[in-house]
Length: 396
Ligand SMILES: Cc1ncc(COP(=O)(O)O)c(C=O)c1O
Image (cartoon, protein in one colour):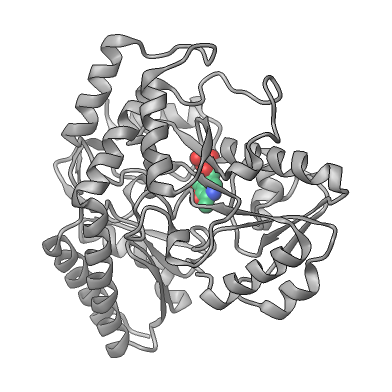
């Protein structure tokens, strides 16, 4: 079907919630996307941090095929080998004790909010702290913890009792928490929020206040987990294990899967029948997830660490040369943000697309770099060469 017809049909059939790209994709392989018109693009945002092993990873495809031969769904009334194998792997890699499986990031955040309520209600604590720039999903609980006005406006009333703080402002945090604080939800590296990254000192202060006030810490590792920062979870770069950690996006190898990781202290908070989901822990998604974790351990996570460092160094060289355009570089591993001059940001996506590279801009002026974790040195050279040429031809 022609692009024009597809566009007309999309407009006719779909709620217009997405601003779709003009390129139509035929298939993907590794870090590359092949368009219907014969162009080849380097994908530097990987399905918004989902395609961590790139496209068409053979190990993931084989795991999915093998599981499909057995069953593609069983209700959660049944014990399921694939779910159990998935659980063993992710608990080992994360260091957590127990889990609850879902089908998405936002559904996992909802489960975490329910855990928090069950823990905090008997203690009379009902305030939840979240962060400016934070994004936790679009369902009501998750939306209530999400900061951006555009996502919230018109949907009120949202969940009450949520306070938004600023990343790394220890004074503000100290003043905000008290006996009434039930939980603090945070992304250690904000995806939507311009890649703001929490400092070690801020996390130490948070841990100190938790000891005093007994609230829960919930880490949203939906985007910054699954090996993206060179460690399995971004929180593993810090000296803390949050009470709850949520993982989704890349962990299902491109299939819907979310994980709520819990420490043993909270294991009896929710009892049989008090929470559940039909599709959570789908066996095909779990099979793909097992293959993903195996690949991560077999060098992909190490590659994310090495390539992340290389990419940051190369970006810093560009910043040195163009300080008036590149304002800041932040993030860890292959979750990097490049804050650029506002006008430059407006046309940056288009300029990269003209050089056959897909990038994503977040927070209006931050180039969000979240490529597949299998990216190579040659791919990084390709990206940096294109970026340099865009910078060279830009007139302030
Ligand atoms: C940090 C973070 N939390 C939550 C979500 C929501 O996840 P999902 O879109 O799978 O519901 C996202 C999605 O972008 C995210 O980046």
